[in-house]
Image (cartoon, rainbow, N blue to C red; front, side, top):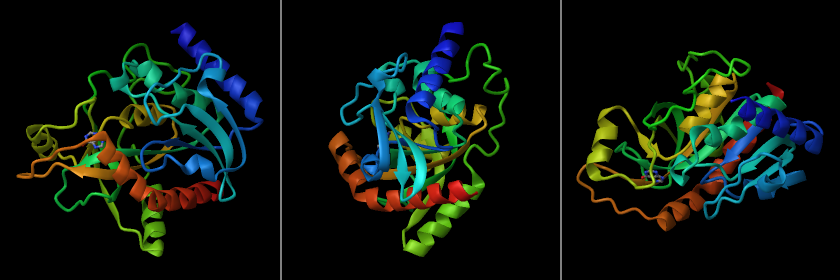
Length: 276
Ligand code: HPA
């Protein structure tokens, strides 16, 4: 554990030195925001492999680059390429970047992901603001000795997702004529998509959408005291009576179609966080 903390501190010091100052808003780009990094101005980037002690990602389409720049004028730290539990990383590695961000002074964390919808009011291509989650990962990211330097042993999860940022996102979407859904995200380990029975079960326990990421990072971000905002793009549906066949290509296609709408909300929200 001493090694782990040392590695976090070293990465944070390295990045603070590399970037100069690190912005207080960070974005973990998942599906639906994959190209946001291309819109940064005054950008400085570094590959994960060049950050001593930082893990390196392996999934196709997740490039592994950390960038600092301005998004429509607002300074942000952008992480392209996250570490999924299904890839075989342990939870300490999955959440390592969030802890590094915390040590560099990040206060607001935005995340995006692709998810399968089981709320019958949802359509493919919808964007859902995550208002809460159900953690079904088989390993908890805070399991083990508590890292007191980050947060308390038993962190509150009563408002894991910021109510004020959710409200602001709806105001932004309203103004731009973007349809937004809200709901509970079920975090499931993957890598299989859901069986019809699993979809039914996730709906019964209170889920609106299911995906394979986000929950571990959010738990650790909240442990560190960050304010969290997360969006899911609904890329497929698992509804009662509908035979659901889902492919990675289909997920990527639906996520790409949602990108302009997702980006608009994130840009405006980053500006809001800069001011407030
Ligand atoms: N299940 C889990 N993860 C996903 C899904 C899904 O249906 N769609 C996109 N990511």
